[in-house]
Image 1 (cartoon, one colour):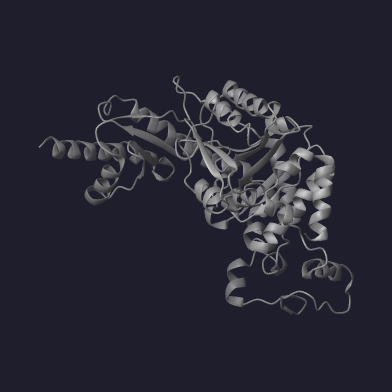
Image 2: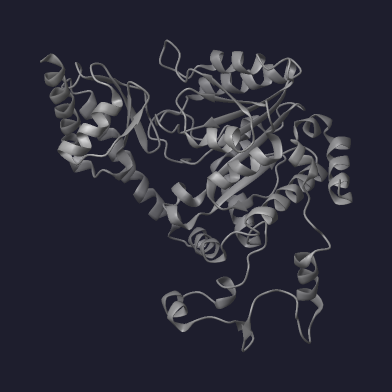
Length: 435
């Protein structure tokens, strides 16, 4: 084992032995090279006043070399904020701005100890870092039965973890905290569990209410009190898109500092929050009461980043930073929120009209981008293909009965027509099966 990795492990083990037990084999081996090209280049950037011949970029007239055909389209930005490599942990000003934003939007973080957000190449990359640092063969990753399919690729296929499922909803059509608690406690023999909480949920668009949130936190704490080390990840991809009386904060604030056996990690990003999907700017934030542990986790995360993508794209980080700093940022985001809320409310009104009751039910939703129909008479894949072929309508089939509809990309005026077409598709298939 490299001495730097050993030193990081010793720091973590000394200050948080349970966290040390949570690390995967890769998580224990990884480190950020302090004596490598990046560290030497950083030192040279500060001291090499005559010539700095360290980093693999090209300079011209004292600024990063660039093509006019590119710079002409980005003239509002200085070349130094576009063309140079961003640091592995991300643009420092952006990290600071995002940390401030977290506290404003999540008052429950007040007084909690958490690290500076580290920039990732959007949320999938952040989840991949979690998997690399904490998941290994046989480790249990606990997610609801209605989930984003990429979790399996990220945790199971890449890292060999075992996916453990529980029903998302209970008999009262609320979040199934009892199912979550049972799934965590079932890992008693392993002594470790990785829990992924995704609210608003993809694919259902569901966010728990305050009491449900309290019970989720209690379920995680019960696992810790039973001697299970719990890595709990809040996948906050759709954060802020809360349209009804649900939680309007991330559970990260309530989970931070919950118990010595609980490591809370927040994965979020500008991707959906700021409507910049192609920018690929995300963040991973750790909570721990010990500053040395937070620093060690940052070093290990930087090691993973260095070993995979080296660093994230600089231009998109600059664009997001400038947006956050703009005095018009909050107003413009509020305008888009109202459009999204209008679409969600319209979907619910249309579905509650009584026109489609014989064809489907729908799962509770109150937030995010999506909702799911539960089909009664036809299979989801059969309907998906028929809608594509006969009506030019795209939807996502999930299992036998569930059809995901992304209302995020449907203008409010078109919502009723969309569901009328889906209903027509169901009726077409019913006629065929009746023959």
